[in-house]
Image (cartoon, rainbow, N blue to C red; front, side, top):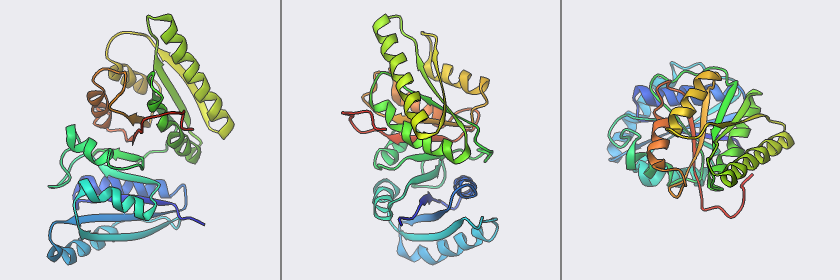
Length: 268
């Protein structure tokens, strides 16, 4: 039986602790191994880093569901997180938005360089992200098949908490595009119904900033997690800005994000 593994790149800062806390919180709902990964630029730093991680763990309350493992090694976050995640068959990577050198603020090319290096979904947290029971998850999609690749991961998280997934899209002035969007969200709802996940679908009015409309929906519907697929070929204008604004959202909500592959099918 394969293990369930959450990878936590930890930079020994407060935001690294937030990511670890969120992984431990998820572990209260599912049996999992939480692997803490700390990468150093010099092997001589390994013993001190291992001691710091032990000190951090000594302050944590760890569920009986959770097994802790640690990996402190020489390496670089931009190239080695993906290798470790693949080697260890991680299901999820939990990481903070900023921290020490090597964990630069998760905006711009730094964020996407880490996220797009991995096939594994991330949950990105901010320093002030709280771990609260997940009741509502929002999945904003667009007209690309790539945007649908987060649907399965969001559904897995929803089933863990018996939460509702809110699939949202934009209405379009063009009737054909509006019909295409409507059909897509209805298809997703049917897939969630088949998999036993609760789902609501909504189309937002056209015009204006999509990210602002997403956040308005989040506030109005008590959303606890935002889930998106990142794909640079999105039909959505300035998608990088859209993704970054949701990762660093003003409510400090966790953002599940997956680097989408060029899609030939719907990835359910």
